[in-house]
Image 1: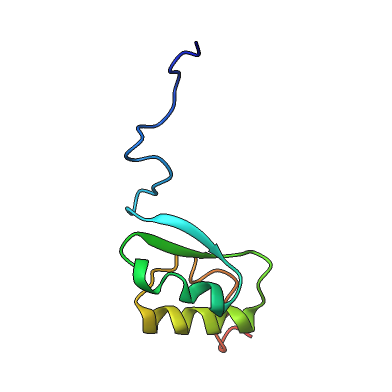
Image 2: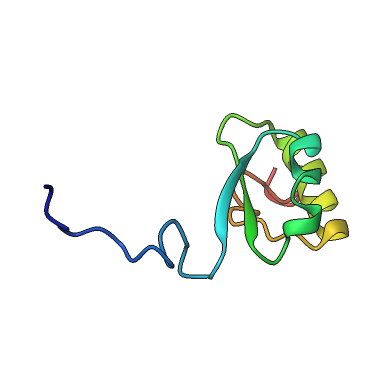
Amino acid sequence: MPSIGYGSDKATRNIHPNGFKSVVVNNVAELDMLMMHNRTYAATIGHSVSTRIRRDIISRAEQLAVRVTNASAKLRNEEDA
């Protein structure tokens, strides 16, 4: 029989400190899955997603009221460019 060890409590497992579970999103269609679950899940944009699609995902997430954990990653202001 295995020992209990250092595992997390079942109620708080896979939950970030902000209170949401994380889902990796690579396009806008995957973001639409979270429309009815925006109080439970937060979107995390995959690291290989281009800047143009990131902007589309972030604007759609604002419309759906879905939280994006890395919304400012890999985005540059037009002033900096």
